[in-house]
Image 1 (cartoon, rainbow, N blue to C red):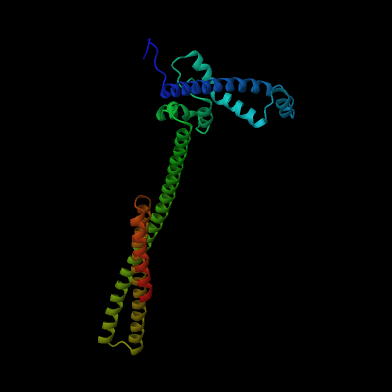
Image 2: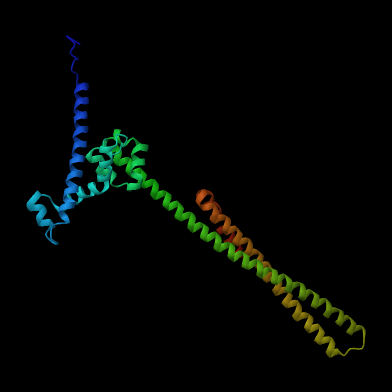
Length: 270
C-alpha cells in the first residue's frame, strides 16, 4: 500500500469482474422479466396467427425467445414485485438470469426452499445444474422405490389372500380325514361283527370292499391335506421373500436361488 491507495492484484481484479458479472446477470434477469411482462401484454392484443410475424418485425424475437421471456415473467414476475416492495424477499434480488433459467426446472412451490437449502446464489452455473440434476435423480429414485414398495405390497396382499384360502381348504380336508377315519372304524367294527356272527360271505365281501374304498379316499384326502400344507408354507415363504426383496436384494436373490434348487430336487424325486 502506498499513499493510502490499495495495491491492485489479479485477485482483486478477478473479484471486481465477478461482482460486475453478478450484477449484470441480475440486471439481465430484471430486464427479461420486464420484457416478458410486456410481451405477455402484447400477445393478448395481437391478432390470432400474427404473433410470430409481430415478434419478428417489431422486436426481432423468435417465438422460442419470446416464450422463454414470458415464462420468466410468469414464474418470477410476482416475486419481483414483492422483492421491490419487501427487502426481506431473497429469491429474486440475488438470482442471475442464468440461475433463474435453470431454476425453471424446479416446480414453483419448491423453488424458494431449494434456493435456500442449496445456497444457489453462491453456486456456479455448473454446480447449480448438477444440484438440480441430483434433485431430479433423487426424486426419480424415490418414486421408483415407492412404486416398488407399492407393487411389493400388492404382491404380499395377493399371496396372503391365497394362503388364507389354502388354510380354509386345509381345514376342510382335515375335517374330511377325521370323518373318513371314523367311517373306517365303524365299518371295521361291522366287518368284525359280521365275521364273528352268521353274516353271509357276500355281506362280508361288501363290507371289505366298502372299507377298501374308504381307505383309498382317506389316503387321497391325506395327500391333498399334506399338499395344501406344503402350498400354505410355500405361499408364506413367497410372502417373506417378496417382503425381503426391497430391503435386502442380495439376500432375496440368494434364498430365491436356494428355493428354486429345492423345487428342482423335489421335482426329480416325483
